[in-house]
Length: 223
Image 1 (tube, rainbow, N blue to C red):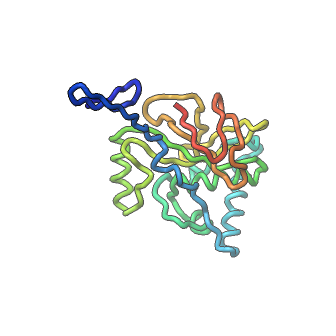
Image 2 (cartoon, rainbow, N blue to C red):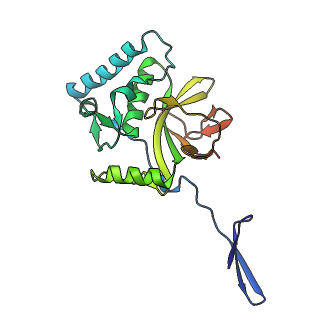
Image 3 (cartoon, rainbow, N blue to C red):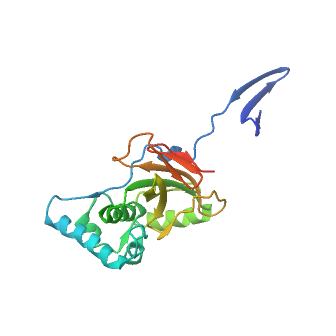
């Protein structure tokens, strides 16, 4: 028995008889294909409304006259990246020192939207190293936090996208405080898959990100 690396077909040999069956290669997003983006909840009262207004007012102050497409780096300067427990409400989030990628992406999405920018949530799969994911597993495991976002050397990540016009998008990584490069890359931190996920998008609606054409609510492998 051996694996034909070219055709990805498993060949079984038994004397003169041979049978072949194709092995379906798992998509890199397989473990997270049905996940939805993280949301910040609202108590329906002044506590959360005041907190949300504080976030948008702080963003307006931090923008200081820059264009509305400017990335909100101040969020990453205020909040450390780390474990967050969900559900999390607005009034809780603003008091935290540490937020995870989902909560930070939700905040970034909110400030872009309030600025008048068309924004949607983004789900990503990235490849790091076994050493890096092992360290994150140890760090998050100390607080008994869920680790379903890590699988071997792959991680699930969240960000947001903005429409800069004519359905051209840019992808903002709120945890890193930078724009994600659309060009395929190998090595540490390489982006392997992306999905635009937002209730305001029509399923199958297309957007251009660099050389990629991304359809809403559909995973796209980028390399």
